[in-house]
Every structure is written in structure tokens, then in C-alpha cells.
Amino acid sequence: MERLQKYCLSLFCLLIIFSCEKDYSKLSSEERYKLAEKVFKEGPYFYQGSPETMSRIERAIKIDSTYCDAVRELSVPYLKRGIPHLWKKNMDKAVICNPEIWQPYRGYNYLWFYRDYKKAIADFNASDTLTPNFIDAPQGHSVDYWRGIAYLGLNDYKNSIFFFNKYINKEIEESGEDWVEFTAFLYRGIAYYESNNFDEALNNFNKLMYYSKQTADGKYYKALILHKQNKREKALIYLNEAITDFNEGYFNDRPYVETLRQIYIQDLEQLKEEIMSNN
Amino acid sequence: MKTKKGFKIILYSISIILLLILIIIGYLYYNYRTRSGVDTEKYPYTVEYIAPDKALLNKDFNVCDENFLVQYYNSQRARYSKGKNGLRNFIISHYKNKNYTDSGYLNIRFIINCKGEAGRYVIHENSLNLEPKEFNKDLVNQLFNLTTQLKKWNPNYTYEAFRDSYMYLSYRIENGEITEILP
Image 1 (cartoon, rainbow over the protein chains, first blue to last red):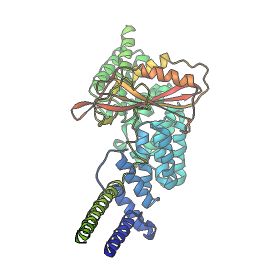
Image 2 (cartoon, rainbow over the protein chains, first blue to last red):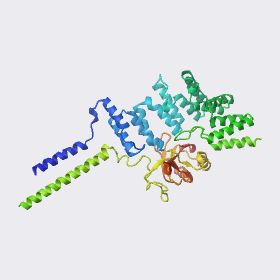
Image 3 (tube, one colour):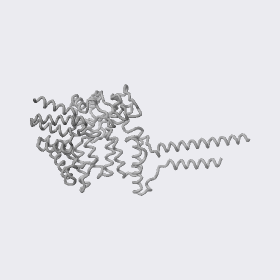
């Protein structure tokens, strides 16, 4: 009987030990960071936003709250699934955690997922102050390129062209014109087109077509200008090519959300009708 | 006397076995919930889950596989049958700003089933700063009714089959006017 009590007590102690939370505060900051990274990056794959994935991210943050990649990752499924208040709550924490990395990235999110151009520009501008010797490139493109798009969203053509010039000229200077993201020519062309500077717009659409042979957008805008200049035959040639390119999938779009000034086959067909009716 | 002792031994043995079983179950449960790390209190479902009993217009709506719902953007994405242009044209041409003064994001999430039918709606109302707020009820009802009139969808196609998928429409509203429809 006495032995049984001892066994029970030992087992009870074991249970207590197993059920206790681990105390990570005894680890050095470097060890905590490495462990958080390990928890965040390793382990079985589960879908983004699943209880398993969200819990694993939370666990990494619990180990080290300065492991900002995990803090940001917590926001992503809410962004993609249209739950804004929970995206913001988590994204703002990531910005506080590491503003140099995540503030320009938040700007990118404001730009595309919320079409809040002013908030996007504010975040891109903040990155100039946070990293004065470095031009940030959230999601692979310079903040100048993103600002060009954001100002176009606001129909502020002067600033849009200014930032596209800044981005394009820097790329040409450092790597060559063929390294320029070709949609920069498209959007700078649209900024000129919408501000009625057709010559500069055409220069950009021609440049776009030079680097990207199949581009429904470039040919559509060129056809629009030619149509406005009463060059019917040429306009039709470009428009028909634009329709072919579109049907083959060569048009500007984005994953997750519609892109800025996205064109649709109906736009092309409508222009064709207009050109044909002006016979 | 001997019988009593034997009975005691059997009782103790059964108790120990039961205790051991309980410990093993407890340990496995601990491993499942804690070491595998699923915080079922905070995350009982995927973040996009729409509870059928709390959703709007779910009564006659059926999904094809309750256990496998993808996102609208997965693989061959789910789309409105008349395209984004058609969707925008329908909403903008039917929406009436009845002197609303609201600004913010009215997000309506729902499911497109594998047959291209829409249902199981849920509404999120947020300010332009993405904080929860309440919109004018008439505005919400109007946009909800219009959204539910978007009947025919092309369902998502993933793993060689049409799938049920989560979808959302986000209306950015400034002073009662729709300025953007996303995604």
C-alpha cells in the first residue's frame, strides 16, 4: 500500500513536469531567436491560416517576440482572405517589431489589398527615413516603383512620373535598361496618356513593346492614342494584336487582387467597335 | 482472510493499470494539443472558416465537401461568370447612394461551391483605418442584397476537380460612394 502511494506520487510529479510550460527566459537572446526560427520554419506543412500553422507561429512568437518574421506571418492569411481588422492588428505589431523591414511591406499591402494610396505612400516615405542609405524593395520592387503606382492611383500624374523616372533611371544607371521592370514603362506611359501627353506616352508604350513583344496593354494603349490621332488603320493593327496577346494570356494582372488599370477583353472589343464605327 | 488479501491485490493491480492507462492517454493528449501545438481555443478552425449556423443565407446552400474548401485564388481561381468587369458594372449600376455619409470597407465573405453557387455569407464592417465600425444599416442591406444577386460563379478548379472555395468582396466606400471593389 505504501509503495503504491509512492508510485502514484512519482507519476503525479511526472505529469506536473510534462504539463508545465517551458521557461524560455533562461535561454540567451540568441538562443531564443534561433529556437523561434526553428519552430517557425520547421515542422510538418499545414495550410496557411490553419489552426496548426497559426499555433506554430504563435509558439515561435512566444519563444521570442522579437522574431518579427513570425509576427508578420500571422497577419498574412487575414490579408488574403478579406478580414481587414485582424490583418491590421497583426501587421501593425510587425511594423513595431521591425519597421525597417515591415513598414514598406505594409505600404505594399495598403497599395494593393486596400487601395489606400495615401497610407501606402506614407509607409513608403517612412522607409526613406528609416533606411536613408538604402532604397527598400518590398516584394521585389523598389519603393520608388511602388510610389509611382500609388500616385497613379491618386491620379497625381506629376508625382507618379517623378517616381517612375527615379526608379527607371536608377535601374538604367546601375544595371541597364533591360533590367527595368517593364510594367514601369506601361504605368509611366499610362500616367503620360492620362495627362494627355501622347508623345511621351507612346515613347513608353514603344519601349514596353520593345522589351515585351507580346503585351496586350502596351498595344491597347498605343491603339487608343492612334485612334485619337485619327490613324484608324494603324490603330486597328495594334488593337488586333492586343486582342491576340490578351487571348494568349499576355496582359498585366496580379495574383490575389485586380491590378491597377487592369484591362479586360471587353475594353478591347469596345475600342474595336468605336474604331470600326468611325469608318 | 486469504480471499480478502487476493481481492486487495487484484484491486490494486486494476487501479495501477487504470492509472497507467490514464497517464498514457493524458500524455498522448498533451502531445496532441500542446507539443504538436494546436491552440484549439484560439484557433478552433482555419481563420477563414464561416460557421454555417451563424452565416447568412446558408439554409438551402450546400457545399460539395465540407472538409475540403480552398481559397478563391488557388490554382484555377473562382471568378464571377461575367468577369470582374461584369461584376463591377452590375454593382455600380444598381447601387444607389441614398445620402449615406459612411466611409470604410464593407467586406462580404462567402463560399462558392463546386457547382458555382454562392452562399454562407458573413459581413465585416470596418473603418478606413481598418477598425471595426457599424455602417448605415440600409447601406449594408443594399450592398448585401446586390452581392447575393451575383448568382453564377465559375468555381475553383484544383486537383482535377471543381472545388468549394472561400471568396470575398471588399467594397471601399468613401462618403457613401463605392470607390473600389476588391479583390
